[in-house]
Amino acid sequence: MRLLQSAQALLADALALGRTRLELFSTEMQLELARLFFALLAGMAVLLLVVGAVAFAGISLIVSLAPENRAFAAGLIALGFFVLAAAGAYFVRKLAKARARPFDASLKELERDLHALKP
Image (cartoon, rainbow, N blue to C red; front, side, top):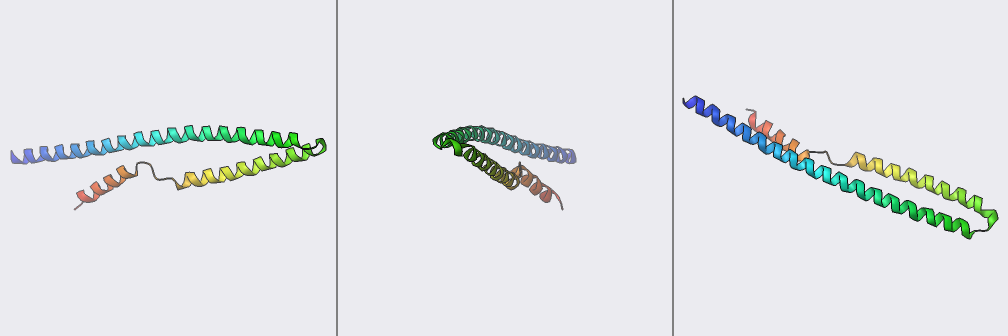
């Protein structure tokens, strides 16, 4: 009978450990989703504001120039847009590679559990 109680206690402890790990995973999932949502929202707002500001600045520069120089200025402004777009793409790619691994805390805890269970 003592062996059965020991097995039940071991199973109960394993289930409690599994539940704790799932709660941690759930919390991390919620934090990741909230972070992603706000990052996307802020990124879209910034992008919209920057595009509007740069477009108005370019238009005002072109209008302020003499008519014979407007085409050249428009070409330079377009080239500037392409350079800025390339720089932005480079930094976004760099940021995407440097981000932290999702669910890192859950994975570390599971790794600790695995090492604790091995003899």
